[in-house]
Length: 295
Image (cartoon, rainbow, N blue to C red):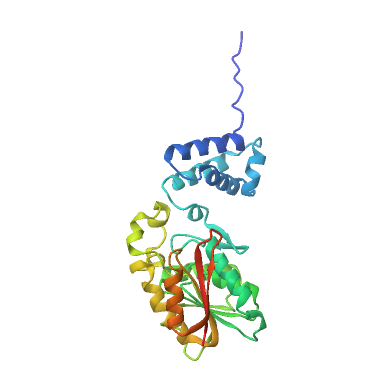
């Protein structure tokens, strides 16, 4: 009597899973399919994204496979990868991300770098920074981590964003340096306190451009953090004079701006009583940061 024996299916490898997810993403029209697949797999198998291709022959457990496909469905629905994974690295700090706040971007890292290289915070006994529109709290966390004597007032109009920022501040054990306050721009700035630096990544997207944004941005990130009104300048026009009012003499202002707003924002900052005004380019060569010093 013969017995039919069937060998079990070989375990799915990292390379197999990667190929399947990439093919699925491409069929669904997902941009950067390979990179996004690598990020999902790296998170599921606890390695770096760059190591994923090197792990191609390693088997993947069923739990990890199910996790990757669950995430892949969300990416296919055009949810931002950063929200799917729930964290992003910003200036070397792990920042929790979800749709309560704007996703931190490399341009904002450049904004923080510019503050750190030119504001002279390290030479002050007890520097005070205002982070206006703090969102996830990434700017405040990066600066407070770099300067132990720094105090940051992190302001945002969104109570939901402030809740997320609070979670990030707590996770980094920076509650002693960072104070969160609900505020429309600088309206609720604490009385009697003068800032050495005001830094902001304000809403600067032109109202007419909002419908044309990528679905990951338009449909998922909070509109209040994006919509800058006419020509994207309405919020900035209100912020600049308010910032000047809370800065100490010779205090500095740093703004992230849209790539087509350099001349307009530079002129606005000069008219508002700032000198040593400069416009800095991002890595793509576009105007991205405007800074000025209070007279």
